Length: 87
Image (tube, rainbow, N blue to C red; front, side):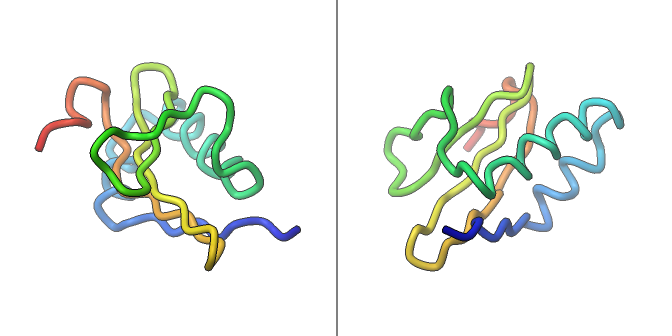
């Protein structure tokens, strides 16, 4: 069973780059862990979304989708919990 490929959207990468380095590195390690376990304990499926999931990393949220057919994980947002759900 091979790991999933992680694809980080340009906007999500900008979100990550704007964070303090210690927070950014903690979030990055959680994102890398998704490659082997795409739906870890504590993740939540987002209501009203076809295939979107959320993991918590302190006060930050990582929003992503999982495609089991192509074995890819698309990271779409990395934001503070206050801002992540704004439409």
